[in-house]
Length: 51
Image 1 (cartoon, rainbow, N blue to C red):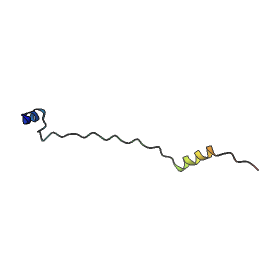
Image 2: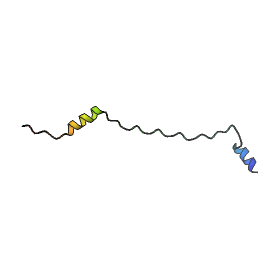
Image 3: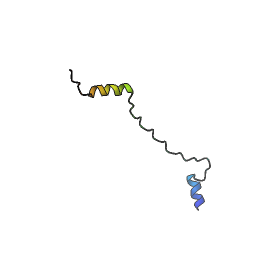
Image 4: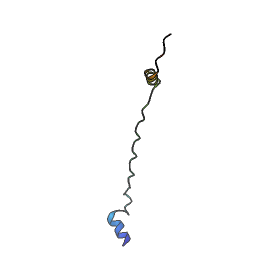
């Protein structure tokens, strides 16, 4: 009986390959270059007092 059920749904078929779920690609992390960092610092740097 069990063998008949396996045959009916194709579980006993050696050609049947169970597909694994594709792994989701990780989201790219934002990258900051030294130039971006430099401009960001200069924008938020406190004003220097002139002598």
